[in-house]
Length: 526
Ligand code: AHR
Image 1 (tube, rainbow, N blue to C red):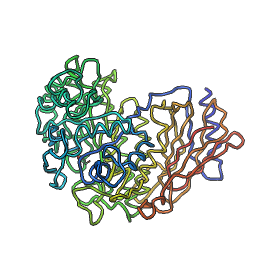
Image 2: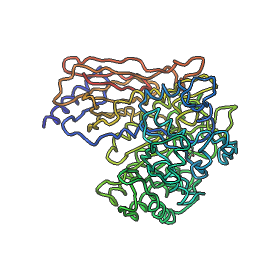
Image 3: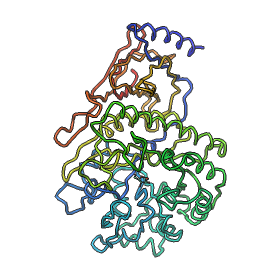
Image 4: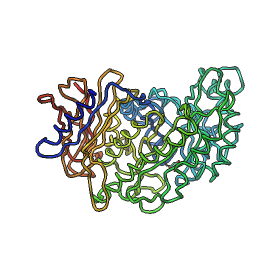
């Protein structure tokens, strides 16, 4: 009743504000929802292009200041994001990776070929021990993706033993000989990647049988939980086929019944945003795009909602107790490669549009916090929708980085139901999307946080916020916006897009926030 009354009052307030209809947001603090798993803010790091070599890993002997070979500037920046989990070594690379190439003295490791990502040499300087150094420098969980496509269950189980065993076994002793006494902790173990595509072009039926075999043979140490992740479907529907969205999730969750020998904890799902809807041909430029491409990018991004909803429907049917998590372990914008760059390296600039894409996705992930237990943006540095771009010793933080930083309070926060009404639409041609996207949660510090996005690139929008039962004095936080849709940070102008302080006071019991055009806002309620 209290909620309904407050909402009706808010309706009246909103419609009367400045003569312009205001979006009305009501946050129900009395009926908290599920916890937003911190791993929703996870990262993906593949052996691809300049992600590791130069972007993150420079080696102990580099002039670039580093710790155990990992560049300090990047690690310091990433630590401010509280990166909760890193997925490695791929991606498609995972299904051609053989772990034995990446252990022992670096100078003696074999040089191999990264066959998918440009046919370039892979020095294997970043291997198991180096990855876990990174994990420890970031204080993150390890998500190791195993090689199902060209490996064997024995190879994978021996790798798991090498990483995790505290016994005196030959493999545990080899790990010690290579410099690590204590076992490493593998929190999440992926069995293959995109097995419908680069991981082997399998059918869900064939893969499901392999998963059962592999998962049965992969035995983490007793009492050390390791989540087994099945390679699932995709939202590449427009260009591959439209069966990928739920067919894999449905088949896997209906046919794998986990038991004490067969671990099955999560199913993955991949979806990339392409302004032009095509993964294989022209995808659209990362900068200097039209308003039409701003719109098509956001339309494509919002499909994430329908894809998760569809997966949730089949998972709720097959797994009503919600024991299986949905891991969106690859997502983000994928544009045409930057002019002059190696097209196989997937290097692209990152603009305010990417910040808006990230925030829209976060609000979607929060909405499905009961099922979405992890997401990993593709990818951490210098690849696709990156947090960080580097050029030799230079480094710049992208608008996407800043969005991740602004959303840190949502990690492990308790989601709060939120209702939007009178929502204005942002329209262009035949396309129309909600102009305002929002989510709310109670952070681990007890404060209520609200995340808001204005998708309209030209219009400031007022938003009326009510929290029934709470006397709100105002809000304070940060806003990310800029004059141009493609505003971005460069090595010469690294602060073109950076968050600015934002605050607003309630007046006469009303809290009305003015959200500038094309902006991301995260505030705490005071
Ligand atoms: O992130 C780039 C690639 O996209 C990954 O290697 C693959 O899994 C996906 O198709």
